[in-house]
Length: 256
Image 1: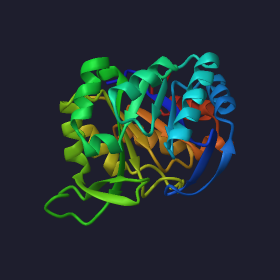
Image 2: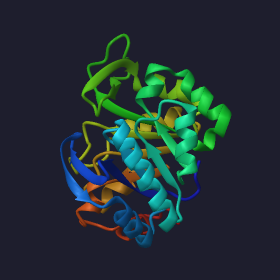
Image 3: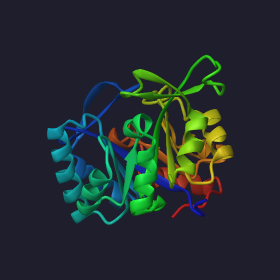
């Protein structure tokens, strides 16, 4: 696991602009991605995550431009997800400046994609992005946490914990665990979900969804997160990356 906890701003990008909503709905403009990336880097962000929330052909081309422009200005690791369906997509993103690539729906449709990416580029490049919802436990979803697609609107029949285990076995180097229930609510991370993922995972766990106060980040770390990710609280200037790191230090958490 990481020795120092990472603080990662997330930029959801559509049509070349950063957008933000609640529970992945009612998206609104939040600014220019390259400008925001530079701002967060200056604040001390350890990494940046870009998620292409539309991932159509036109938006994908726009996203390559965003990644390239950001990589030219910002010198911290960039993770890019959304619309990645093949190892060639990964190669193109890496060529434009991405350091890691997040995969979600395409791996659900064809789990072998994870093996292919890990084999070709190494586990350090591959991030499994999980959009997780609470549900009534049942035979196929014994944990009560189900994997969703389409921004949380479609439930699969995949138990989130079982899927995470399989993805790690296939070569995933990191888990980005986003709670759809908590996303944008600012009520705090889903600590139970974070703890369950930490318990099963041999790779770093990134907690996402629900940050509303600086104290929430420390709670996620205490639950087992190796990194904490947030969007709206940074975009709306409710806190800075530095504020989060200062609070984590006060709580005795090692940060960079």
